[in-house]
Image 1: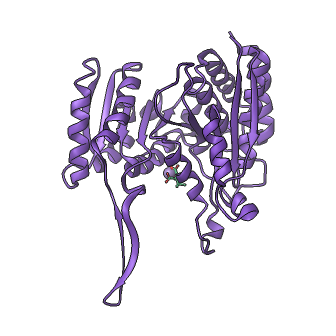
Image 2 (image 1 turned 30 degrees about the vertical axis):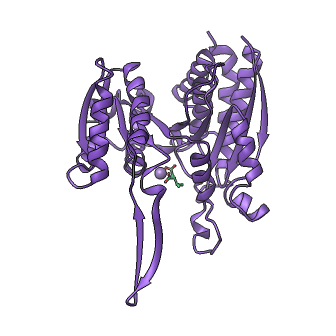
Image 3 (image 1 turned 135 degrees about the vertical axis):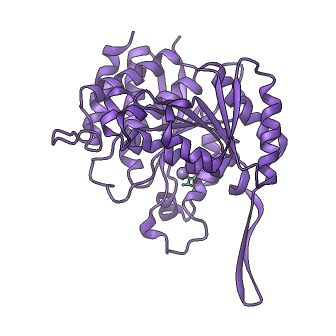
Length: 368
Ligand code: IPM
Ligand code: MN
């Protein structure tokens, strides 16, 4: 069935402005092949918005995101401008979107296909066949807990951040993880620091309770330090991993390295349950950042942005066939080594937009 969908497009900063158009290109190709209409509305976020409007994201643009079917995002930030004092940092755009759109479940899949094995810094036998999914809690924990401030006491500068979770915040994200595990290999690893933190002991208690509702899912608990080790030593052991906001932030950068290029990994951030039309407002972004070191050169890998568009089709629009078509088109480009220089290192690499063209062109061919 064909449909009309409103997609908010926020390229953001740095290579975000180069890779997001390639995700849009893929969606346009899907529209042409499957008869859908995508209405794209582009907005500024991060430094781009600070420079234009003096704020990382305008309220009216946030409202437009809320009213769309899904948001396709690039990246925020620029370390070269870190010293500049602004009222609100560019990352604030991302954090506000997450919080105000209630995007509590962040899905970060990591898959190492045979073509990617040589790109990984780890030995082939360790990574060949890795297929895991990290579900990171995204609207709670130390990122948002209060108090969060700094002050001076007895001539000492002090600062505090607060790691707080309610049981409902834990329950809803663990449910998402259990549902996903059930549809995959039925294994769930919950990561915490229950030997030290009260918030982690609550996390573990609630996770164990929720898992009893899913008898077909096996649950194991890991402490975060041990998990950092297991992820490198035996990544193939893991299926779905669920964890709190900051542990998830750190572990997903580590997990991304299993594939060798952070330019390959998409992510989805989902809010509350789908409406009666199967639409679940979601936010889709590459895991990589704005990469100012390579920005403007046309060499950034668009794969993560294109695969984010595929996740958008699947998770927010319920278009499974369309999503897997995009994924097949990307896999084909990588298998044929028609890709950027982070992946193709023999001098035959193509540019960001060329790779986007290759993928968009094959979407019609690989559709079932
Ligand atoms: C991420 C990023 C963000 C985070 C930053 C840019 C605020 O590192 O999406 O992983 O810490 O969540
Ligand atoms: Mn991060």
